[in-house]
Amino acid sequence: MNAAILHRRDARTLVPGPTPVIRTERLTLRPHRLGDADAITESLSDFAVTRMLARVPVPYDRQDAMDWLVPRTCSDLDRDWALAITERDDVHIGCVGIDLRHGRWHLGYWLNRYYWRRGIMTEAVTAALERFARRMPEVAVFSGVFADNPASLKLQQKLGFDIIGCAEVYSFARNTMVPHIETVLKPGALRLLQAA
Image 1 (cartoon, helix red, strand yellow):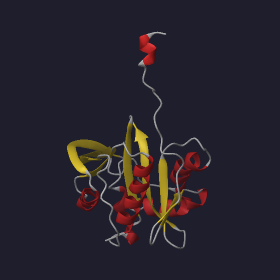
Image 2 (cartoon, helix red, strand yellow):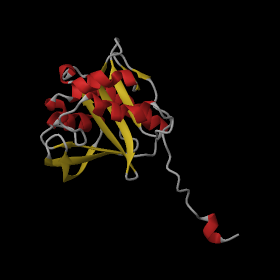
Image 3 (cartoon, one colour):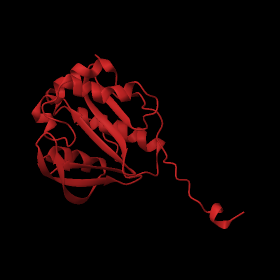
């Protein structure tokens, strides 16, 4: 047997498994459904929400929501997590996603504006990251925020993310390059928080 074969690395990417259902004190994080399209459209039609997101177009309509939902709801092959944030009534109010891009796991999230300042995003992101860390304990999670989004940066820093750099990222909603603060949550660094 050739020595090169003995030392070959396994090129397969580890994945966290299927999107889970996670219950917290107030919330249920669950896989998306096609029936979430109208609620997603309502939330992402609000420029106050989409201006803080890099990959969401403006205007945002129901077909955009369906184009995003169909691959996530009609295939068992999706390795990424896209968790719908719901309260007791099971109405979609936001999203926490952890997806693999360019060999790194990335965290992204958004919340309908009418649910801001209630600690919902803290509770949702904490729960998603805690579950992900249990499934993938040796994996760093990357994220970032636009420089004019101090609330999101504060959330990430409370959870244990460190700033690792600054760049410019194109924002579809703003149709321009926007200063972006890049962050990372190193393995074992998650600070478990309760909703504020």
